Image: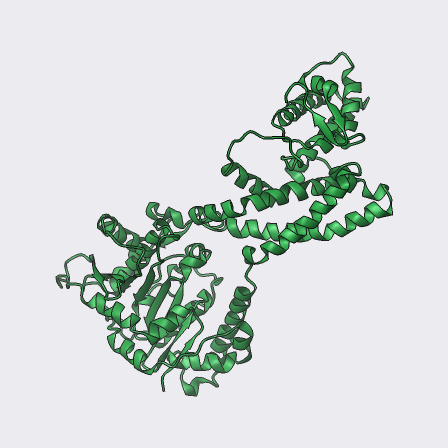
Length: 578
């Protein structure tokens, strides 16, 4: 009986139920053979063909002299972040390692590939077998980095018997791009030793401590295991490694002289006998997982029927079951910033209502900071908004982390999309964090108290800022403005302290002059809210102390402005700078 159980992407279902796999394999066989002289060096060849439905198919193959020995020894070394694939690196994975031989062979044909005139607005299939499959994967990555996803269709990459290509960081960097990792389908026969050459039989998990170079390689994308009995697809890297290691143990010593396995017969069998079953959700899989996993492993001949009761088989089934459960739960609970964006806008609107109320009652910052001392009503208003504040911080903290994990090119477009929402959030919520921070008697918020996600959101705005003439604002643009005011207040306290050393007084005066320049620059750019100058605000209290320290004879641009400013019902006129 033939069984096909898909625990991977829809691509696996489509590939087996249609002619996709057979067409890809046939395209590889159509590549003209290279000389079979065993003394000739291994070479990579490729062919571009057109299918009737306007689909372009690029097939890669390696010379017939290729065998396992070409992947062993130094040929199996990893190279760290090769220049041609620096784009794969992300902030979370700044360095990735790729199979050195594969990158070298890709480099040998890169100039020819660059010259190809491929219409990426039409469907594109990239395929290859054995080492040619590695080149197909690298070419697919290379294209994904260069095409405009708004105008192009993403290519599909199908490999047959391809050795593992990179390390865990490489796998993670690709997996972080959901639109990339779904492009790859790797077909592996239980009789083909080449895909397993970089997998140690002792491999049990991604965290296994091993000095063997074979355990450093980690699969990415969807892997379709196949045998004479059927096939099964998996996405979870640890499960794939375990199954490949099990296959290595079962076939140890067998087929080791095989150069390139012929997938034609297996593919025809799958096409004619495939029984498809889609996976709906994680709970569905978990409820019937053990029976399903036994059938999966039998279908690819990792375990035999009589092995079900053995401790070794049960241990493997249990490991696969646990990994799948964790993987599917993680995917189900994966954070999607777009999904909750509208809800968070509602939370921000509640904070905006509080700001409007507070502005008319002593100012947004000071109302929040001093709510406890202003009576029960203001305290209740603050407590209501604290929940929205917490929800917003959690959302944007996760959003920033998720977007920053993405590669520079993909992340840039997403950062632009979230830039304005993140800026509004930062300017509305961070002042409340600062108020809470300094109300607890703390110091130096900018260096010791500021959350990393605020810094990143601020950088997003700087990276995409457009200079324009500004008008008076209703919200102070620098979300850390009040931290500067509080630090200036602290410097005034140092100067008033009779026990302060001359050096500390000198430093404090320098800090205050720096704050004056910062304040005046903000005023000239119309980037401070009028509530800053409300009677009794933290800034106005600072200013009274500062002038008392400096004396009435002290003059500066800021003192000139403060003497000439006029206010009325929360508005101000910049006499010299309007």
